[in-house]
Length: 235
Image (tube, rainbow, N blue to C red):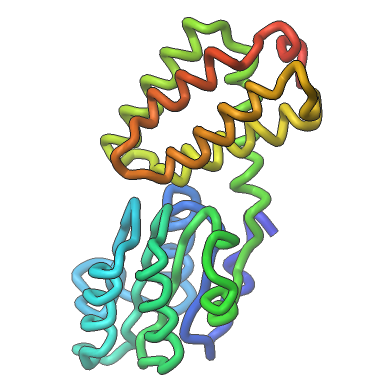
Protein backbone atom coordinates (compact mmCIF):
# COMPACT_ATOMS: atom_id res chain seq x y z
CA UNK A 1 0.00 0.00 0.00
CA UNK A 2 3.00 2.29 0.16
CA UNK A 3 2.38 5.35 -1.98
CA UNK A 4 -1.41 5.28 -2.09
CA UNK A 5 -2.50 4.77 1.52
CA UNK A 6 -4.45 8.04 1.47
CA UNK A 7 -7.06 6.17 -0.58
CA UNK A 8 -7.88 4.26 2.61
CA UNK A 9 -9.01 7.43 4.40
CA UNK A 10 -12.78 7.29 4.68
CA UNK A 11 -14.95 9.68 6.62
CA UNK A 12 -16.83 8.32 9.59
CA UNK A 13 -13.92 7.39 11.85
CA UNK A 14 -12.60 9.50 14.70
CA UNK A 15 -9.06 8.06 14.90
CA UNK A 16 -6.71 7.01 12.08
CA UNK A 17 -3.20 5.61 12.35
CA UNK A 18 -0.38 5.78 9.81
CA UNK A 19 2.47 3.37 10.55
CA UNK A 20 5.18 5.71 9.33
CA UNK A 21 7.23 8.55 10.77
CA UNK A 22 6.14 12.17 10.37
CA UNK A 23 9.03 12.70 7.94
CA UNK A 24 7.60 10.02 5.67
CA UNK A 25 3.89 10.73 5.88
CA UNK A 26 2.96 14.14 7.28
CA UNK A 27 3.26 16.14 4.05
CA UNK A 28 1.31 13.49 2.15
CA UNK A 29 -1.47 13.52 4.74
CA UNK A 30 -1.72 17.30 4.81
CA UNK A 31 -1.87 17.46 1.01
CA UNK A 32 -4.71 14.93 1.04
CA UNK A 33 -6.70 16.78 3.71
CA UNK A 34 -6.31 20.05 1.83
CA UNK A 35 -7.28 18.71 -1.60
CA UNK A 36 -9.86 16.04 -0.70
CA UNK A 37 -11.44 17.30 2.53
CA UNK A 38 -11.02 21.00 1.84
CA UNK A 39 -9.17 21.57 5.11
CA UNK A 40 -7.49 24.94 5.57
CA UNK A 41 -4.01 23.93 6.67
CA UNK A 42 -2.54 27.33 7.58
CA UNK A 43 -3.91 29.78 10.14
CA UNK A 44 -6.71 27.45 11.15
CA UNK A 45 -7.29 27.11 14.93
CA UNK A 46 -9.32 23.95 14.29
CA UNK A 47 -6.43 22.20 12.53
CA UNK A 48 -3.56 21.31 14.85
CA UNK A 49 -0.27 19.53 14.07
CA UNK A 50 1.79 18.27 17.03
CA UNK A 51 5.14 16.45 16.91
CA UNK A 52 6.83 14.63 19.78
CA UNK A 53 9.95 12.53 20.11
CA UNK A 54 8.44 10.90 23.19
CA UNK A 55 4.71 11.26 23.82
CA UNK A 56 4.19 11.70 27.57
CA UNK A 57 1.13 11.79 29.79
CA UNK A 58 1.24 15.58 30.11
CA UNK A 59 1.14 15.80 26.31
CA UNK A 60 -1.97 13.65 26.33
CA UNK A 61 -3.62 15.95 28.88
CA UNK A 62 -2.88 18.96 26.65
CA UNK A 63 -4.39 17.15 23.65
CA UNK A 64 -7.47 16.19 25.64
CA UNK A 65 -8.08 19.82 26.64
CA UNK A 66 -7.77 20.93 23.03
CA UNK A 67 -10.01 18.11 21.76
CA UNK A 68 -12.77 19.06 24.19
CA UNK A 69 -12.78 22.70 23.08
CA UNK A 70 -15.56 23.64 20.71
CA UNK A 71 -14.91 24.14 17.01
CA UNK A 72 -14.19 27.79 16.24
CA UNK A 73 -14.85 27.79 12.50
CA UNK A 74 -17.38 26.07 10.25
CA UNK A 75 -15.39 22.90 9.57
CA UNK A 76 -14.20 19.98 11.69
CA UNK A 77 -11.53 19.97 14.36
CA UNK A 78 -8.62 17.81 13.22
CA UNK A 79 -5.46 16.94 15.14
CA UNK A 80 -2.38 15.37 13.53
CA UNK A 81 -0.13 13.88 16.21
CA UNK A 82 3.23 12.23 15.49
CA UNK A 83 5.68 10.58 17.88
CA UNK A 84 8.43 7.99 18.12
CA UNK A 85 7.88 6.64 21.62
CA UNK A 86 4.80 6.72 23.82
CA UNK A 87 5.02 6.15 27.57
CA UNK A 88 2.76 3.60 29.21
CA UNK A 89 0.97 6.32 31.20
CA UNK A 90 0.31 8.30 28.03
CA UNK A 91 -1.11 5.28 26.21
CA UNK A 92 -3.51 4.60 29.07
CA UNK A 93 -4.65 8.23 29.08
CA UNK A 94 -5.09 8.28 25.31
CA UNK A 95 -7.10 5.06 25.46
CA UNK A 96 -9.42 6.67 27.98
CA UNK A 97 -9.87 9.67 25.68
CA UNK A 98 -10.74 7.43 22.73
CA UNK A 99 -13.19 5.37 24.78
CA UNK A 100 -15.37 8.46 24.93
CA UNK A 101 -14.85 9.94 21.44
CA UNK A 102 -15.02 13.70 21.03
CA UNK A 103 -15.95 15.51 17.83
CA UNK A 104 -12.24 15.89 17.09
CA UNK A 105 -10.76 13.71 14.33
CA UNK A 106 -7.29 12.32 15.11
CA UNK A 107 -4.55 11.26 12.72
CA UNK A 108 -1.68 9.56 14.56
CA UNK A 109 1.68 9.01 12.82
CA UNK A 110 4.15 6.61 14.43
CA UNK A 111 6.67 4.22 12.84
CA UNK A 112 6.14 1.38 15.33
CA UNK A 113 2.45 0.91 16.21
CA UNK A 114 3.11 -2.64 17.37
CA UNK A 115 4.67 -1.10 20.48
CA UNK A 116 1.31 0.39 21.41
CA UNK A 117 -1.06 -1.59 23.66
CA UNK A 118 -3.49 -3.75 21.63
CA UNK A 119 -6.46 -2.07 23.31
CA UNK A 120 -5.27 1.32 22.04
CA UNK A 121 -4.51 0.00 18.54
CA UNK A 122 -8.05 -1.36 18.32
CA UNK A 123 -9.37 2.22 18.49
CA UNK A 124 -7.68 3.21 15.23
CA UNK A 125 -8.42 2.69 11.60
CA UNK A 126 -5.03 1.66 10.18
CA UNK A 127 -4.19 3.38 6.91
CA UNK A 128 -0.91 1.73 5.99
CA UNK A 129 1.35 -1.12 7.01
CA UNK A 130 4.80 -0.68 8.55
CA UNK A 131 6.76 -2.54 5.87
CA UNK A 132 7.79 0.53 3.89
CA UNK A 133 9.26 2.15 6.98
CA UNK A 134 11.14 -1.03 7.87
CA UNK A 135 12.68 -1.21 4.42
CA UNK A 136 14.37 2.15 4.97
CA UNK A 137 16.03 0.97 8.18
CA UNK A 138 17.08 -2.35 6.65
CA UNK A 139 18.76 -0.42 3.83
CA UNK A 140 20.59 1.79 6.34
CA UNK A 141 21.59 -1.19 8.46
CA UNK A 142 22.93 -3.08 5.45
CA UNK A 143 25.08 -0.09 4.46
CA UNK A 144 26.31 0.30 8.05
CA UNK A 145 27.44 -3.32 8.18
CA UNK A 146 29.63 -2.81 5.11
CA UNK A 147 31.47 0.14 6.67
CA UNK A 148 34.87 -0.07 8.34
CA UNK A 149 35.10 0.90 12.03
CA UNK A 150 36.12 4.50 11.38
CA UNK A 151 33.15 5.13 9.09
CA UNK A 152 30.79 3.42 11.55
CA UNK A 153 31.94 5.73 14.34
CA UNK A 154 31.37 8.75 12.11
CA UNK A 155 27.91 7.48 11.13
CA UNK A 156 27.02 6.87 14.79
CA UNK A 157 28.15 10.38 15.68
CA UNK A 158 25.93 11.93 13.00
CA UNK A 159 22.96 9.76 14.00
CA UNK A 160 23.39 10.79 17.64
CA UNK A 161 23.53 14.48 16.66
CA UNK A 162 20.36 14.09 14.59
CA UNK A 163 18.57 12.61 17.61
CA UNK A 164 19.81 15.47 19.82
CA UNK A 165 18.60 18.01 17.24
CA UNK A 166 15.26 16.12 16.93
CA UNK A 167 15.83 15.49 13.23
CA UNK A 168 15.52 11.80 14.11
CA UNK A 169 14.07 10.02 17.13
CA UNK A 170 15.09 7.32 19.58
CA UNK A 171 12.43 5.21 17.88
CA UNK A 172 14.41 5.58 14.64
CA UNK A 173 17.51 4.41 16.51
CA UNK A 174 15.64 1.42 17.91
CA UNK A 175 14.24 0.52 14.48
CA UNK A 176 17.77 0.74 13.06
CA UNK A 177 19.13 -1.63 15.73
CA UNK A 178 16.27 -4.07 15.10
CA UNK A 179 16.99 -3.96 11.36
CA UNK A 180 20.64 -4.76 12.11
CA UNK A 181 19.59 -7.75 14.18
CA UNK A 182 17.22 -8.94 11.45
CA UNK A 183 19.97 -8.91 8.82
CA UNK A 184 22.52 -10.55 11.13
CA UNK A 185 20.07 -13.28 12.11
CA UNK A 186 19.40 -14.15 8.47
CA UNK A 187 23.14 -14.31 7.77
CA UNK A 188 24.53 -15.74 11.00
CA UNK A 189 22.00 -17.11 13.52
CA UNK A 190 22.97 -17.11 17.23
CA UNK A 191 25.70 -19.60 18.15
CA UNK A 192 28.53 -19.91 20.68
CA UNK A 193 31.00 -17.81 18.69
CA UNK A 194 28.72 -14.82 18.15
CA UNK A 195 26.90 -14.76 21.50
CA UNK A 196 28.63 -11.51 22.51
CA UNK A 197 27.34 -9.76 19.39
CA UNK A 198 23.72 -10.67 20.14
CA UNK A 199 24.23 -9.75 23.80
CA UNK A 200 25.42 -6.25 22.83
CA UNK A 201 22.49 -5.79 20.45
CA UNK A 202 20.05 -6.76 23.18
CA UNK A 203 21.76 -4.38 25.62
CA UNK A 204 21.61 -1.56 23.08
CA UNK A 205 17.92 -2.22 22.38
CA UNK A 206 17.17 -2.03 26.08
CA UNK A 207 19.19 1.09 26.92
CA UNK A 208 18.28 3.10 23.82
CA UNK A 209 14.77 3.59 25.22
CA UNK A 210 16.25 5.43 28.21
CA UNK A 211 16.14 9.18 27.55
CA UNK A 212 19.36 9.67 29.55
CA UNK A 213 21.40 7.23 27.44
CA UNK A 214 23.71 8.28 24.60
CA UNK A 215 22.57 7.01 21.20
CA UNK A 216 26.06 7.56 19.79
CA UNK A 217 27.74 5.55 22.56
CA UNK A 218 25.34 2.64 22.18
CA UNK A 219 25.78 2.53 18.40
CA UNK A 220 29.56 2.75 18.89
CA UNK A 221 29.42 -0.34 21.10
CA UNK A 222 27.64 -2.26 18.36
CA UNK A 223 30.15 -0.95 15.82
CA UNK A 224 33.01 -2.50 17.79
CA UNK A 225 31.48 -5.95 18.22
CA UNK A 226 30.01 -6.16 14.72
CA UNK A 227 32.46 -7.87 12.33
CA UNK A 228 33.02 -6.33 8.92
CA UNK A 229 34.34 -9.12 6.72
CA UNK A 230 31.33 -11.50 6.82
CA UNK A 231 29.04 -8.71 5.68
CA UNK A 232 31.16 -6.94 3.08
CA UNK A 233 29.49 -8.68 0.15
CA UNK A 234 25.94 -8.61 1.44
CA UNK A 235 23.19 -7.26 -0.80
